[in-house]
Each structure stands twice: as structure tokens, then as C-alpha cells.
Length: 143
Image (cartoon, rainbow, N blue to C red):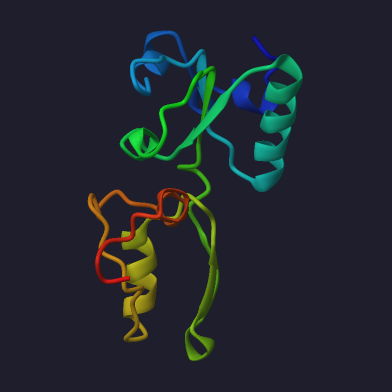
């Protein structure tokens, strides 16, 4: 197992054992599921996993992790559920910057106040994230 950065050893920042097995992708249970809260923490995990020769599967919720090619290995899952903020939103410019774990429904709640919306209607829209939509290229027919 890799040397996991100490910030992840808080009870709510890592899942292992049976808790991690619940996040299995295509029948492959990870050794751990990590919950970074910043880009810097993601970078730390990727560097540590790379040095240890471990495969990472990114996921916010496990349903999206099943989209696309089947991974050959799944040692770690990096969940972006804690990276879920709208960082910038300029309604007049029609621009926004969000973290990958920001849900489409949360983003729509923000834009709706300005009479705007992102014209996406993916399957499982209630749990879809902006990062997941970008990663899977599955934004639905309104795109």
C-alpha cells in the first residue's frame, strides 16, 4: 500500500476494508477510497500512488465509474465529493468555474437565480457532477 498523506487518516477522509469494497468498480474492490478536499491533495495522492505503482480510479459516485473502458486495475478510488463548490460565476458573462465534484443540480440552483441554466440532461441527472459529465462525455441530448 502507498504511503497515504496524513490528511486522509481522519475517519471521514478514507474508507478501507469492507467500506472500500462497497465502491468496487467492475468487480474490483479498491484497497482504499480517499476523499481529497483540494487540487493540492489530489496531486499528493496521484504522486504517492504513482510512486507506489498503484492504479487510481476517479469517482464521485460509483455509478459514473462504470462508464467507459473497464479499468485493468483499481487500487485506489479518489472521490471528489468534497470538491463540490462553485468557485466563480459571472451571469453577465455566462462563465463559471466549478470544482469537479460540483453536482449539476447544485450548479443549476445557482444559475436558476439568474434565469440561466446549463443545457445538459444526462442520465442520472440527480447525481451527475460537472467533472463526471466532462469525463464521460454523457451530457444528454440537450447539449
